[in-house]
Amino acid sequence: MTRSFIKDFSSFLEKNNFSNSKIDTTKRGADLCTFGVGGEIPILFYPENDDCLGQSLVFFKEQGMPYRILGNGSNIVMPDSGLKEIIIKLPPLIFMGPSFKDIDKEEINSLEHGNSLKFNISASSSLMSLSRQFTDVGLSGLEFAAGIPGSLGGAVFMNAGAHGAEISEVIDFIKVLDQNGVEKIYKKNDLGFSYRKSKINSGEIITNVSLILKKDEISKIKAHRKECLEYRKKTQPLTFPSAGSVFKNISKEISAAKVIDDLGLKGFRMGAASISMLHANWIIVDEVGGKSQEIQNLVEVIIDKVYRNIGINLEPEIIFW
Ligand SMILES: Cc1cc2nc3c(=O)[nH]c(=O)nc-3n(C[C@H](O)[C@H](O)[C@H](O)COP(=O)(O)OP(=O)(O)OC[C@H]3O[C@@H](n4cnc5c(N)ncnc54)[C@H](O)[C@@H]3O)c2cc1C
Image (cartoon, rainbow, N blue to C red):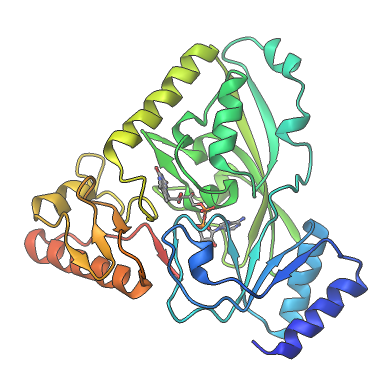
């Protein structure tokens, strides 16, 4: 990316009075993904609101500049060689529309058990924080997300899920901006959700998500959420850099972890990356100086060994940028 583009883009933001937007040219991929790997990022762009984002997308199109949208980087492996695209990250404090914070707790308290409420929430919100906040006020639906360190937008894109539940189950509609900066609304049924997958078009950026949560007994919801967290702590190597499960499960009955474990691959290592001893479907970076290439090599070895031994093609859940 040329310096002249960065200069032109800065002037564009200034001319349009988007002075609260931020361009950061100092970050590396390793700063932006939970695996902690990856090289130079030419521009990390935080738009100040959806108007700024929409107009910037038009500017990028006119300039022929490709972009990518980053959530919390908890399902991405950034490349060692860095990226050429602009990386867009929605700033955490923007709530484009009425937010969870604006909702009167009394309205929730007066709700009958089993009835639901809708919330229009910024896609940049932390999923873990939403899970905690909804639980605390007696709204059920996001308990499963207690330990998923993604943004709401990333969770929708991935159809994140755990403990038999998925984010798609609590979605009403989403708002996106397309490559022309045009806002579109998609109802849940337009989004083609399946296991860890949505059909959100390439280049579309989710800005808002309308969630439907159900009123229930606070103690019951809290207990369920606690159970989910405790299960995680027992079964997942949470103290090491990772991106959670590496492969999709083969079916509801056959987990990827089981087939990898059965092949004796726990502890297998490529440089700084290894297959966790605690959970065979997790790759962790447990030595300093981790590289995305090492993670990629490990993924390829696992796919190859599983295919040769049992004829099943494992499909990665993590995304290599
Ligand atoms: C410790 C740990 C535990 C995990 N446990 C689970 C689990 O139990 N279940 C599970 O499903 N996942 C799990 N994950 C993986 C990950 O947290 C989820 O996939 C999460 O939903 C990714 O969200 P993100 O914001 O980090 O997205 P990112 O990793 O930043 O991005 C993922 C994809 O979503 C796209 N995207 C992000 N934001 C937007 C947006 N606003 N609009 C359009 N596209 C967008 C990106 O372009 C990218 O293609 C875990 C990860 C870790 C590190």
